[in-house]
Image (cartoon, rainbow, N blue to C red; front, side, top):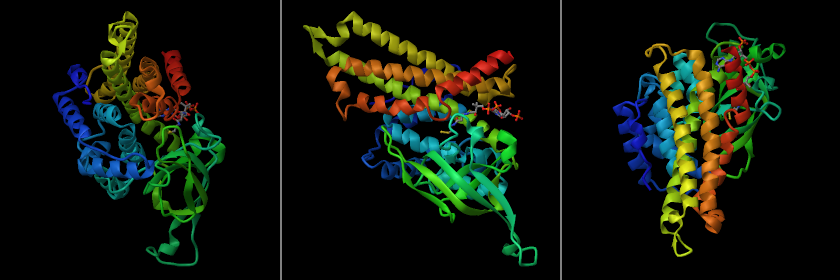
Length: 404
Ligand code: COS
């Protein structure tokens, strides 16, 4: 089934965005990946997406990327189109972006050169490690600590024994790509008394001593997910990402970019559910006519289409707004955070309703394992939770409303 692209005629998009979506929609229908083993499948999707050049949209042009800067509209379109075909393909794509976003925003030139081109080629699998068992929505409450230590016992400027190391201790959980990633962007307390102003980001390679990623978490829509345990995990001080104690803002800025793209993924899943519902309703005989001939069915399809369009407009507005800050008059950077939160909240919540309606329309077939609407029903659920649950988006929007 071919993902729809007619909505790309909206004024939010340029002809380049339309071409991107049309080419990707054709490419996606030509890929077949056995997704029975989520880890193997995810690695295969990264390989395919890298070889075809799609991952180049996850990094800026200076480091092997497709566009000068991370383009929110391209990210939204890519995720929407991939999620229409395969939520796991979308996941593989999205994590390359989220797991490298902080390096794009705050990495040193050496860090950017070491990681970003490899992410864009699909040679390195990326991950973002923020959440902890006691710090999900309240990300600032994290307990993982990072301690700096200067090694002694040797002299000479270039002697590696003199370099400052950082030791990490703690546990991260719900880490997407955990266990298959080549590196993790890890957020840890460097000044535990300072709350969210005492957090710093680090790039931790998967083979770092003292890092255990072996605990896989099984979820209702299988994808690579793990617990990360840091036990005296020592990394070089050069792995610090961004400013000392600037990690919380860096995490929020990274999430800001990708929240609108989560909305894109939800849109893709909702559009697929609507397409499945239409196809089924047109061929399913019932009481002497087709399911599609009932006004009850038409009313549901009307609701579904309106929910999708409402979410789409918020999503495309948020992406357009971020891309055009500084060029379109009157756009303010602060307003984008709330716009992205609205898009994420509306698109994921609406998609859940649309998919539920599509499943209901399928009757018993809808709950049969292996039916597309059945897997979409499981796939959509976590999008209302990850990268800021709906309740977190409500808080962000509410604070912004109060600030006026
Ligand atoms: N961009 C830049 N800075 C931001 C920001 C943003 N989007 N959001 C907050 N900040 C800054 C604030 O300006 C504030 O800075 P100062 O210390 O200089 O005043 C600081 O960060 C703390 O902000 P705030 O007080 O709003 O933080 P809270 O602890 O109240 O947390 C929420 C705010 C709930 C929004 C945040 O914890 C959050 O997003 N949680 C969800 C985390 C998440 O998405 N987890 C999933 C991980 S990936 S699956």
